[in-house]
Length: 111
Length: 113
Image: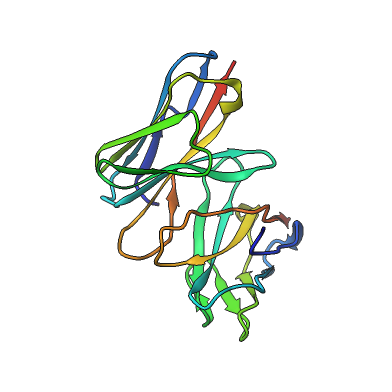
């Protein structure tokens, strides 16, 4: 009963922007969109989150559509170290919900 | 990076032996979590803690117990290890200030023979 849908894999050339889509058509009004990634053999890493406005931090940008049914994570200048599995998650920011990682998108940065 | 360490990082043990994994944080965060990660199953919550001596079960808690006697330490114990508990175990923390961003440790790879 996945709340999000992501493509299983994507490739991106090094130095280009990587755009990772996520569909979350059943998102409720108090749920945020979170993005995490997991580099091989490491623990998951928090990237960014947002509610309805676009967000940017030192790692990435998050674009959420006006109806909030989908979003895109943007890595503006992808490097080889960005090769990882990226997870899109929706949950209530202020609850104690556990993180449920689906299968995510395996992003490969091509030299 | 959040100050989270896990010990040991790797362990091989035999079926039926007790095993304790330790998660240590230097962030003074209220919430701590134990997850396991297996191929085809993603990340699954075992137990979590919302304060000293306050713990609760996750979705795969059978065969595991936890203890939190200090803010900084969260222990996961396998009372009698089984081969099905071979996995990578991750600890995570988050602050209690209403935010839900979790920060993960480096993981412990456990093999039960």
